Image (tube, rainbow, N blue to C red; front, side, top):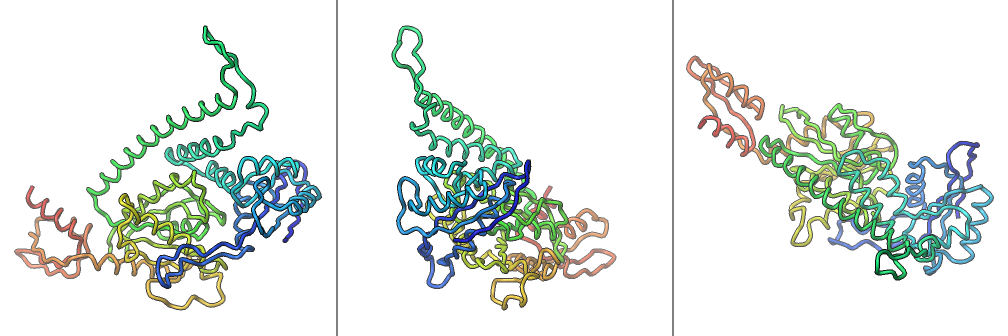
Length: 442
């Protein structure tokens, strides 16, 4: 067991404890002979992540504990002795909220609250709280509310006395009427149906926006990675945008897109996405839908890794497994060749004594100091150029609009000016070549 003690003054943050019931996890499902997707994480690193999650909702962490699990007790998850020991430590520190970094059943949650004399929330409830605070877009807010309601519905257990009360019938039917639990569940179900309809409308609107973007077919580069890997900091460094970026988990939730210029003068759309996390609550899988759709449409996927983190390999495994699941099944969101479009960006090299060794498909950077960003821009240019074509054009000197269009949408490799025509050698995408030909036909 580990212990951390801090003071919380009157009127300050709520004193909280973080408890990690620890089972050494089995290796993740292997998807290749040596792809590194079976990495596991250490208990201390998992506890540190849970502390970061809890701290992000504004509580003061005054106690932490790791409790190895031999067997899972249906009533409290933890063993009887572990419950008593944790309760004594929390009473000593004046804990008001206990975060259990595991999925608790409603009965386990209620029994632990009784034993410890404080509010208990599990990993799912904690992440829902964070998502509720951070969602900004309409879809993000709707998804979080839907996830909250789905979670709350499972907490409606009959052992809560106020839910056992009966309401009388009405009219000529009489009878015992509905119990409070039935009313609450019906109200939640009605709200869930309404939210799903609103979400479908939002998705249709986003689909129209994506279709409109295809008419101006700039390549899309999507940033993915474990939460707190530095995606938003990298996004800001490459685009000059002011996207919220802090050293905390889930600093940004909603996908953000900006246009950037590469050294070749090529325009690309950079998309920042929500961070992944291990054991994402099932209620929140749908909340990732918007950001995952942007990844599916990306020409290049930048997997941003916190290479200085002690659990970097396990975090990499979590991200790769989620993406691999997106490429499975008849309704796969990702095509089978998604791995060929991925580049691993080894971020936070400024926190390392020695830079990571060079490896194919990786590039070390520090989004904070800017080191390696020029190399990353050149790599994006080279990757995109591999799919481009080189075409020769002869443009009349009076046709300034066509000249400007080619400079705007392509990379002019060579130009020869003459009285009768301007000869250009231009590298551009097949889609832009077709668009230029369409301009001439109009």
